Image (cartoon, rainbow, N blue to C red; front, side, top):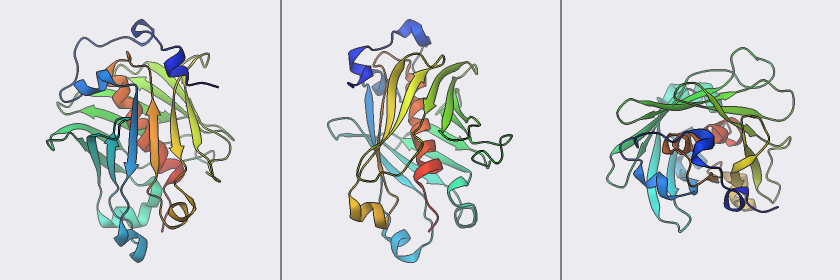
Length: 235
């Protein structure tokens, strides 16, 4: 099955195109895919202590366009593990902050349906761009993506098994009614050695090229939330 983004891109009218582009995010209007590489931390590998996650965000040519860094204290990282609350600051090449991803401390999974995962995506000027919310399911992961007004725009559905096992792990991005696939979040296979010794993974997110920049930024936030929920492990 081909990439639905390139074969049948969704129109601007399907999701609503914003009147203005948030500061520092104009580049997102030119792309339909981003690659996200979590940086390997040798201190974390050898000591077993969780460090702040760092990310390199690139285009499909491998050119870095943004970087991201988690901001949490040592006790929070060690005690709360993968469900820890955090802010992730996303910066451009000039180290100017363009996004903040805010995740509160909440539970995860079918045992606590009333307190599931959430994340807000906020622009540099403090404007809310969108949010991601985990939905209660028994088997397959389900997240919903909302715009700044709270409107449900996309649904993200993951596989039953989140183990790579030699291949990529695919999370499908669907329209709110689940009728059309418009993109994907993909956790890429990193090789046996890297998968065994570290959780510094490589991801990609694809979306319609004419999608509102605020929603593209929100889907980037969804990728990082997926990383923490399903691929971040306590040492």
